[in-house]
Length: 312
Image (spheres, rainbow, N blue to C red):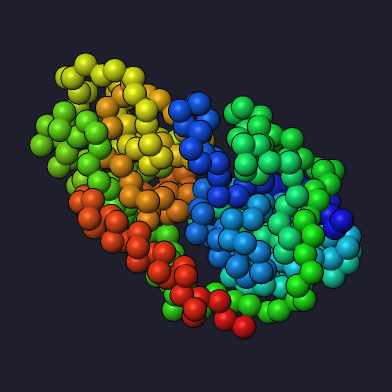
């Protein structure tokens, strides 16, 4: 079996796939790639099923040796990758020959880059998924981020190397955005109209105190709700307004219940954009209705299933 030797793990590198769905009632969040579109595209470039496990790197990439070689693709943010000191581009498949080393540095654009390998990352599934949930120490590679000296196994694959790239005209329509579209939250009616205007007209900055569990936002504080809130289930992308009035976007490693009002919910089509937000990035919110949200998701899925998506 082929392997990856971790020479330098980077800042926070974990094994992620498209997550484990349906276990929220058991208190287990879905986890999975913070930017699932980038994961899906990277896997398509190397001939994998689009949900195959890959390495997710955050803000600072790692250094990886491929003793037996591998067919690779980088997707997501640009981390200035080199293969044996020669630059390699994102959104393009390439081959690492036996003994070659891939190095990635600090991000030049968004928050996360994905290293997809033909055959995927071979780890023991937990609840049907290879995704790492670091807070609980479950899934992925020993339930934790990678460390220097780790040896990660690659799944079996038999396809010959074929140079592929993502069609630029489609990629441009899938890139992250800084204006996040939202549908009303379950407690949006609790929030006065003046506070809702403040929320949608303001610019918020992603706090340094953000992670895969949630993105805390700095900006105009919203007034505290006057309603009595009972703890209830919460969804991915819910925007909570806790005491103090600073919104929080619940993210892929979220808690599954919460007792704070939710003013809005980021639409599914824009959740990959949340995964590419860095500390100090500035964002805004735009209200849309549920039909528009469904239409935008359908449009996104049509792009991802287009015959023109992957070019050879």
